[in-house]
Length: 207
Image 1 (cartoon, one colour):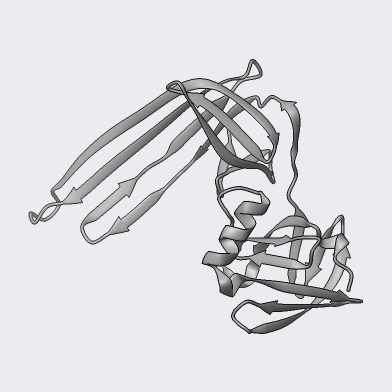
Image 2 (tube, one colour; image 1 turned 60 degrees about the horizontal axis):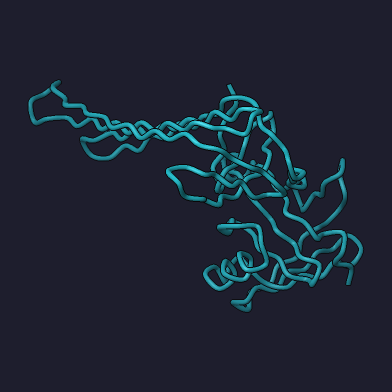
């Protein structure tokens, strides 16, 4: 069994599932967690996610070009394996290692994400925005909008709320520490393709 080459978190886009974002986390002791991200990229986070998602967690072995996974549920899978451009390819799925930030890293720019949920006679929009500056300060804005359709054809009612915050931040490895409202908050962070950010499993696009 060769475990060391897969001691990393990998990211990919699954073109068989509408290019959905997928994550595979392999550990050097021969375990794997896929299809879910823990709250933090720590051993404790891995263990907690395995307990909650036993169908996505198990043991793996790598022999030549064959990757075998045996999940905690008892199910087993075989994948073809090869290295590719610094990452790996499993069957059709191309995965690249998730990067880490050196201690003392300072971000510089603005990132945002869009969020829209539609239901019967109701649409909720909730975009959020981060601005990180090289001096170690940040600002955050979230806007939640609600639009409902009345029983009168063509009539609608809309409302919105805003939440704002400013403070200081620090980044190291895959940890983002925010100091806002006098309290420290710990978040997971890693670089996403295109100079984008993944914060707590959500991709924020740079603009």
